[in-house]
Image (cartoon, rainbow, N blue to C red):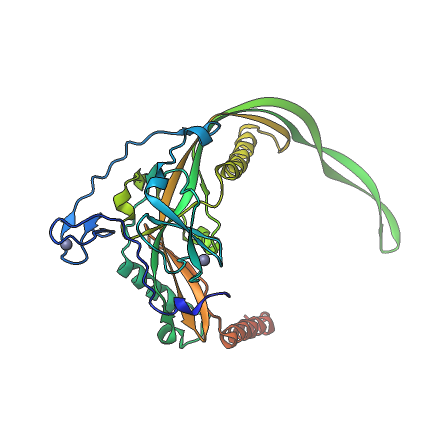
Amino acid sequence: MTNVDNEFVEDGIIEETEVNQCSSCGGNTVYDPVTRGLKCPFCGTEVEIEATRENTTEHDYLEALDQADHSWSNEKRVFKCENCGAETLLDNDKVADFCAFCGSSHIAVTQHDAGIKPALVLPFQISKEQAVEKFKKWISKRYFAPSRLKKDHELKKISGAYIPYWTFDSHTKSAYTVRIGTYYYVMETRTVHRDGKTEQVTEQVRKIRWRTEYGRYNKFFDDVLVKASRNVASGLIDKVEPFQLDGLLDYRTEYLSGFLAERYSIPLKEGWYSARGIIDQRIRNGILRKETGDEVQIVNVDTSYDGITFKHILLPLWISSFAFNNKIYRFLVNGQTGKVSGKAPISVWKVMFTILMIALVAGIVYLFQDVL
Ligand SMILES: [Zn+2]
Ligand SMILES: [Zn+2]
């Protein structure tokens, strides 16, 4: 990992809170993943958040740019990282000191629109302390890492960020052409040369008879999920999936209090192209299950996509990194399930030793295979 500024090494202060004033002391309350309510970090006062799941509004894809709710821009300002390009959303009166995704301090407010307001959010269920515990467990299990990694690594600041996703629904109608193969067997006689003599050998040979079939396949796809982020950590995000989407709740600004949100960097249209790719693959699998034959080959599928609707949703992620031997290694913790993914240093000696041991065991087995 390169381009990480030294500022990241310091415990940088990022003002990421929403304004939700505490009724007792006037401090800013933040969302607490443990109680799933708001909590005042100064006096401990807790406030419940009314969790609802009523938002069933699906935005029409084709009319999205006119109709989608852009009122988020009234709440949020967009900060852009000059280093990695990630855009972070913070409350209008807050300032970002560093980029949560790459650690750079080259981050400045932009005039960019906050974009389409999220419909649903999966609130954090893993607290910062729990995320650090998960990380410690993970790092202690890095078998190929240098032995001193466990105690000598330096944990950096950890940021809780909501990552943007798109989900799409669509009714699909497909007309398709397939080739269906049926096996049959014939006896064939051929000439072989054996020990200098010529012989006739008769044996059973498998052949395939092909026929072409036409069919229709209709299916409704619900909540096809695609990532709307291409931040520098997005390669690791796939490895902390899946998220349990039945935990999605109506978007409320309280859930973001004390956390960051990333602005989507994959536009709606591009998101739909990805979703369509997933849908097309599922249609092909469905056709292959429907058509029976010894072999089935898809020649052509022609699909119409009707009633395409979408939702913008936010999923929770802890983002951090650790330093070891003057190098920075990024890692992520799923904010709902606690699953960890990251890169860790590798000890060349441990890898070599393991390969040597495997080779040794294989060698012994080979030498003694007649005896055993
Ligand atoms: Zn308070
Ligand atoms: Zn960055």
